[in-house]
Image (cartoon, rainbow, N blue to C red; front, side, top):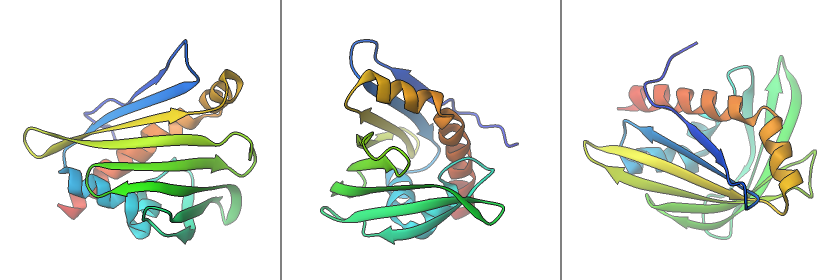
Length: 162
């Protein structure tokens, strides 16, 4: 397993059904943004190391839609889908994120790409869900492993692309 020098913070607000994820990357906002909107790049880093990601729909523009499946040992184990509500290049993405197994648990997520000194980026994702039960279910699903391992894979991808 690859170690990363940047920590991923995952914070659940005790008063609101939200999750905030924050992480710094040693790459410019344009690079981190591109890794979120280019389906070939996105499939290479999203999710835990134990799965492969297969993009089944991808239209990364305001009003577009997306879908992908996670496979393990050649078998589909999970699928996700959503809509791109706003795509503002190198600054912000607003999308919905739904796990097919919990279609009523849709999250509205806002991703912001903040430029830092030295050509670095702070990525912050605010995920809003309908209630605490949905939020707590997301947190207990192992999503933290997928997020942290995915961001470590993104670090590796960004280093190779540099």
